[in-house]
Length: 342
Ligand SMILES: [Zn+2]
Image 1: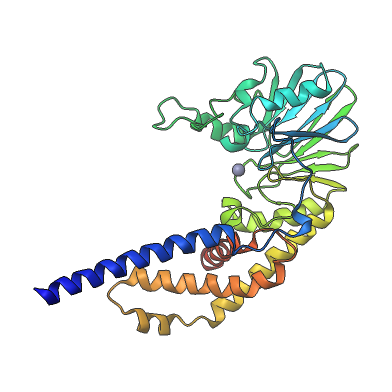
Image 2 (image 1 turned 30 degrees about the horizontal axis):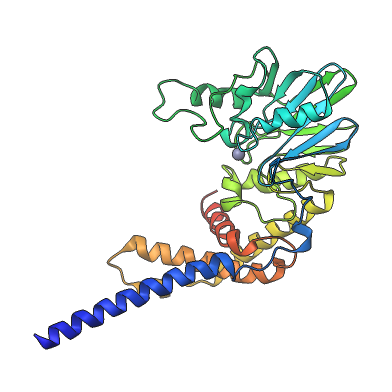
């Protein structure tokens, strides 16, 4: 009896200390173990009372951010062209526009079909012209199907959006009043239909969910549907003559140097994945894990490849890009999957 009691007490103590340790570990991860973001990742302050920032880029082109998502609009003298409608900014988009012009919104451009970037477009006038690449329209038609089990944009601020009324295949020039925007589709990257939006007079390029000025991209190359297209999009962006880059996320606009920096970071990840795929020994891992659970062998192997790549990459980038410790492993994993299958 006594031995059983002591054993139970031992197990209880062990369980409790393990739980406590893992809780402390989680706190440490979120509070202390991440490197402070480099100076390069800092953006202009956002008034917490307003919850958004609107800034003129130049020549009637404005950028709006809530610190995590961003969009832009262009005042033309004959109405406002808006690009995207992130639900996190929502009604504040209309307030931001009203801060700088009384002109109505006449044109809406969707950078791509994802609800986290356009899901508040229901706020825009119904009679505006809605422009997108034709793949975006196709995907929105499917996404807005009332038979879907989960409705499109079913989260705070999101909802159904107007379907594009004008679509194009490769290139489209939108001239309104004194302003020009050049839209271009160069193939699948983040998702089919994701376009380059260029304001030549303002030397500004917008490309969403590809490049994240000052920071590592969101997980899995920002959940890119086509990894090869994602890599190519960096070079495609650099073919434009731009000074300002708008990426749709985080707290500041970018420059040409930011695009080059992310291209170099991605090339490093690719080299380090290739090296890891050469060095990590699958047979040795299989011996160690045992053959009873083949998926576990494979998981440990792929994780070892990603971990080897992350350990080689992070030290070189931690002073340049924010939060590389958070997502580099995930990028390594995605790139290694792409190398194995694409
Ligand atoms: Zn997206």
